[in-house]
Image 1 (cartoon, rainbow, N blue to C red):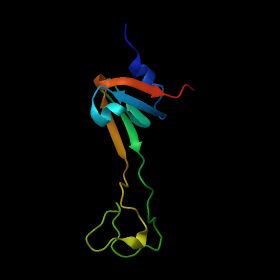
Image 2: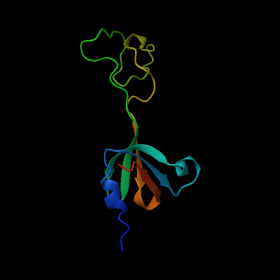
Image 3: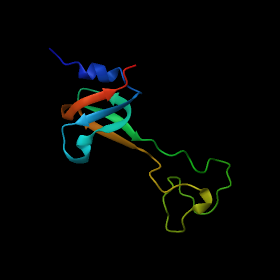
Image 4: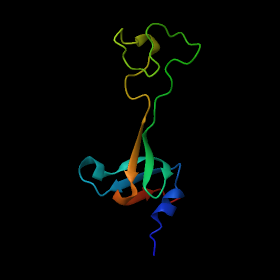
Length: 107
């Protein structure tokens, strides 16, 4: 009898969930994010949403603007007001064989 984890996870694509893994350390504490894909090999979570553009087209940005908001060595690009965190977000890929528990909202 198949456990049906893959099918259950597929029903929750687009929803926030937490996936606990069989690994130790910080990764064993689970990953929380929006489930974006599931297949028989792995699942993917968006764990950190990227920042919106700091300087949309037509804004008053000037100077050494870099599209990704990183420092360019010519200054700190303070005129654009972007933060220097991760503007792209992050995706976590978890092998299906390493999942210990899948937690989601009941409704």
